[in-house]
Image (cartoon, rainbow, N blue to C red):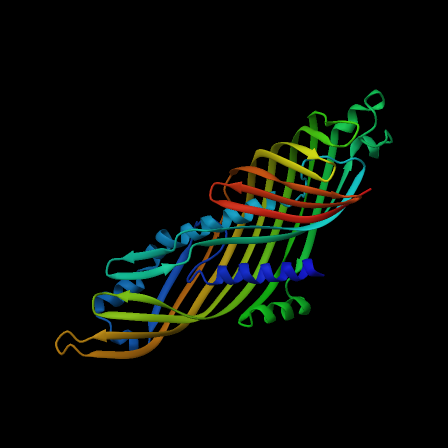
Length: 382
């Protein structure tokens, strides 16, 4: 139960960060996008004609200077989280293992300011975050086919003991009432619907088998090569009531503040084919330190419908009398589009596995350029 509560909190926090990305925020590269920026009400009448024209035409600048960068951050997070969902650790399985964990990926880059002619949208956040729960099973192929556990003495070992198979999967519904209650306790202005489905498998082959002393003080985990296929599907409906007002510079004589609800509907399917090499060392049976590196080929598609609409307050200075006039109105932004994830992604991996009799606690980290992912889980070894 504590893990499930942690998962709900992490999901709520991640989605809050996404929604706070003021105009557009989802994990895909921008393609075929169509945006609209519309200002209505008495506040908009304070603006000079040239500024109103620039505001209505600012969607292209928002797309190229901000949207593309945020979407790049999000897609890297989604792909790396999908890759890091198998809970493999050092890649050793004696007989059979079953476990559960959660994989999260994210990055926080410098805030972005969008400049378009006389307009300036200040300090827009550039974040990327995603989270993937998972259930895992793993088995040694030699054990499965009746040749005993993989730690069988060398003279009785079979070549199939060098193969370990990992399978993972999970389906999660955010519309569950218990989930909504937990989210409401953490963030009462966030509404979430939809779900995540992920599954995959990887087979690892030990090019160099593991070796240890007879006392269990030290063990070399060998060197293994892995090839897998991971699939993830997301469908999210998010409404975030943002009480934070953002500042917009509207030429030299007007300043605006904008707040409002963020709404988006996101659909994504990502298939990754990770390939990596791993090795490790175990000390006093209790702790295993492991590391590796690899790359992943990625395929898929995404679609997005996004909107944000809310009150706009504008304070303008009359250049002839030097007096300030304040009016209110409404500013709305709408976006829809389709895209594809990056074709490939290189990564490094490392972590610790703690052995407590038949219980294994895994903490695994993965990194690619400026993005990091963490996988935390518990496995039972038979």
